[in-house]
Length: 261
Image 1: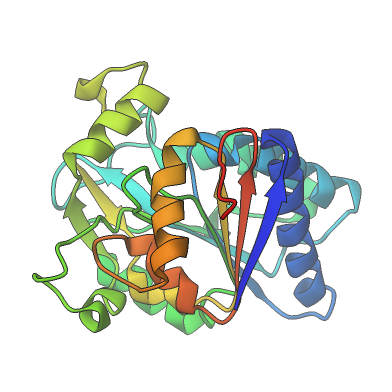
Image 2: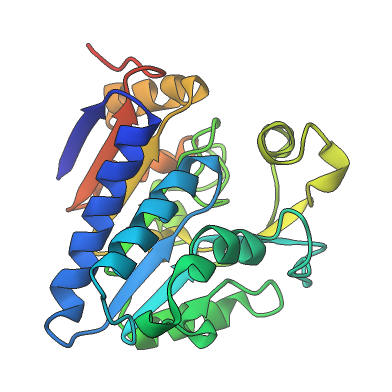
């Protein structure tokens, strides 16, 4: 079921998203149950992670039973992840923006954080399945409509059913994705952006019990408007598959995006 929340700006979006994630985590951890949280990266999530860490620290939440599962990691080639020291490494991003902000007494350890490995993407899927699947998946949306690095594909090249079943894997990044990420995260340097990435599969994302999509860039308006107008899952717009998810919430900022019909 689709739920849409309109908020005025980036700060409000970040606070709303952090509160949703915090409440979902606490609901299960307080009952002694594990929680599997799918994480996204990028400029959209920076303030959300600061607020989330503050909530977890301030309320003294024991994170022993929390595991995190990142959507993606850049790769140097089809088999080799970028080193953690790479300026665009998502391992580096997550440690800087979230993990290192958690106080030691919160009991979140390195082994609880998982990233898809281009050397063995199927192992990521097996480990996630063994852990019980995702309780909540946090998502951004690419300017071309991708989620994670599941890039758009021509509908004539793959059926909607097969696209929705794609596993975690290594892919070559689309040219628009490279250009966008260069502008947003690499000071315009295309050479700094790797050409490959290991991405969580559509199957794993869509199997999450709760999905939360945040949007705050004007460039996201076109794909969101098309997704909400057509209401048909299509490989040409990967985020459109979220519309059939039983618990899908979209939060967008009205200072940058106008989706009023």
